[in-house]
Image (cartoon, rainbow, N blue to C red; front, side, top):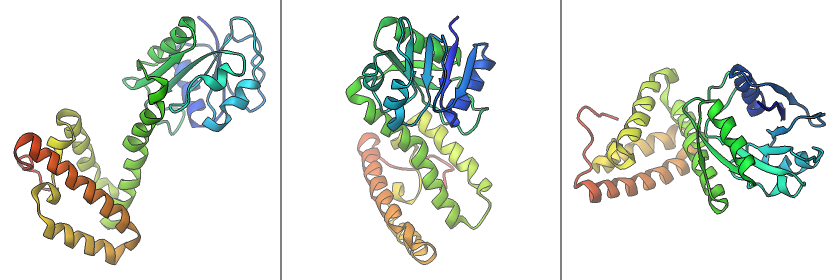
Length: 250
């Protein structure tokens, strides 16, 4: 079992170090910006995308050493150009602290050789993730999808919190149920609410309330409302009606 040196002491570096140790792997790090990786055969760069090339060049190249990164949007090129056999493993999971859980998550993997790809696959499966590959030309779009699903969701929830006037805890069951319905039914069939019912009068009243309380949110509301109208039209075309499931009131 190869020992792993992890470079980068940010959220992902700390989370992966903790999780790999908990899974029984021997891990050195997370190490800082000028690391001594010693004789480690596997080095994992958990640094921002713009720093991958610099970090890879700081790792001495040697026979048998594999150097990887955890970026979703970056190909293997910056690591290969530094003279290393390269791999990457991108956990499709948010990590906000060392106790992050990766089991059940997807992981985009790549390797410049079969051995490098196998190391990426091994790291993913060690943490209970489901590895898959993404063509180089699709990596940025793949990462954009991840950002929309995770980061933008929080932006929307922050806007909802601002308008709510209550503790955000009251929204949590609604958000969870929505995600579960999306998982089960897909976006078109899971859509509920006034736009799905064609109730533009209610949408107009919602917009007026936002204009009064938080006018800076109007551009986002308008853009999302228009996108949701398109989703609702697709639901009508696909299913013959955009009626909300029984009991839905959102």
